[in-house]
Image 1 (cartoon, helix red, strand yellow):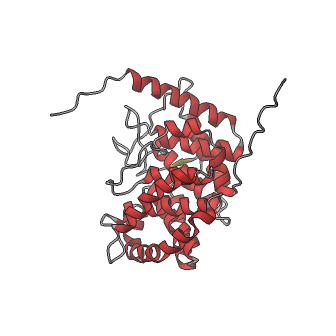
Image 2 (cartoon, rainbow, N blue to C red; image 1 turned 30 degrees about the vertical axis):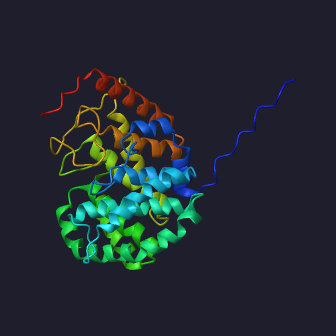
Image 3 (cartoon, one colour; image 1 turned 45 degrees about the vertical axis):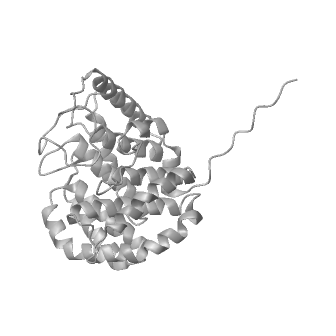
Length: 311
């Protein structure tokens, strides 16, 4: 007697940004350092864990999401009376942008009710952090005026926290950071100029931040420059998966998702930028480029001997 195959269960209901993350190919996220296997609570900011939290929420995976939320609690436990976390404002802004992005995803996910009370309980601490950030705003705008991926991370912190806290002033300041970042965009070819240079990793970091803003801030309409930026990125990934070198502003990237033996090549951030675009636009070229890229650098990493631990 033949038995019918068990009925395929539909994925848990998600919308907006959460739905995009829900449909991303998990195996490609696992290769990227945006999705760490193990969280390290001793590290000052857990950026990759915040993405893992967002992805877990999008999939309705309460167990993993709860594990990731531990990092949220441990980070806010380090908050000082002034509102900072003991580090520089740029690092705090990047983390606040990542955290608030993940909270917005949670609110669009099957775990919205599960995390509702925890999110509400953190709002006073989040407001305190943004009050401290406001005192650093001029410094960040000046010091990061030629670093678009940082400006876009700072825009995320203000725009997303402004949404969560229903604070129009924070949202206004966020648009100011976004406008400053777009001043570094070269419309002729789609490159974001990082200290007057170009680099695939820096470009990808900017494109990730920009897409996340576009997914969560309805009045941001930057699809045309963004599409040019993606095309710039795609033209810098060769048929064999290697990434073309360009006018790098410095030897090593300061961005947070560097991986692989060639530290100038930010495989994680490039993968995430193209994954977002693939899911948003059903762009086959982006998915093919990710597969070439990851295959090449996985092969390269496997062929590179590891150094013995120092004594």
